[in-house]
Amino acid sequence: MIVYLSKTWYNAGYFVRLEMSTVIYDCQHCRYTFPADALPERCPDCGKVAVRLAAEEERAEYDKIQAKIAAEKWDGSAQC
View 1 (cartoon, one colour):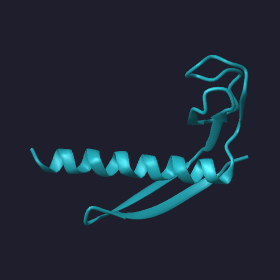
View 2 (view 1 turned 180 degrees about the horizontal axis):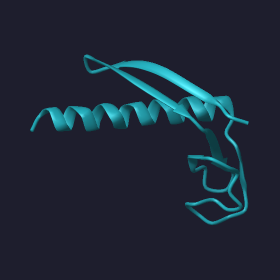
View 3 (view 1 turned 60 degrees about the vertical axis):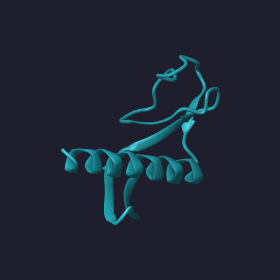
């Protein structure tokens, strides 16, 4: 299953667009949310066998965080 995400946020005067064609997973043990091409056997953060597809709310939160990181990175490079 491929999930196509395309979101646009307005952040600090900039429009940030995040596009990705990947599946988002969530660890039920440590709550780490991450993209991967296929369902991993273990969580890449804690190593537990508790990985599942991320719920809609978890994917939305992941998108929001990634957009914020991208905006901060862009703002930081523009200040040089």
